[in-house]
Length: 144
Image (cartoon, rainbow, N blue to C red; front, side, top):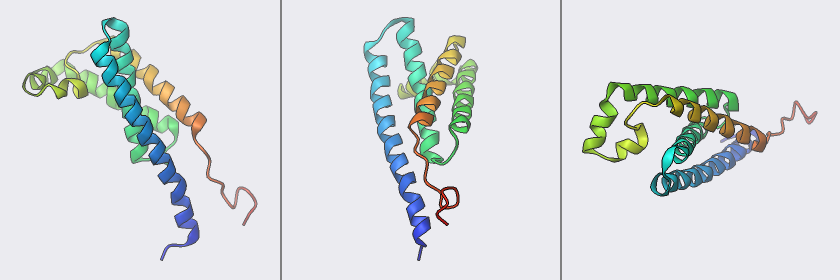
């Protein structure tokens, strides 16, 4: 049987994961709308920034207690690696056979995308940090 303190500690994590999943759904819809309805370089960069936010949210859901800076660093690293992977030409080749690959891996390297990823990750980390609720600690709050 779990102690009350261990089950109480999970409630905020569950709530955080639910909020992150709702945010992810909103970001996916916004990203798809940007992809479908947008045109030009601004829409492309906005889509890339939203992609980076989505990567941030996936990591945050997987590791909900991680610090925003660590999640952001991981998201930026993943986005950068995916962008560099486009230099191999494999994502473009795979997208010819299965078009959703284009949405996940992209098809052509663009250094401007790296800037958009950084903006998206920084925005996500900032919003996450500002909205994150701290779980009261009995030791910290003098309740022990």
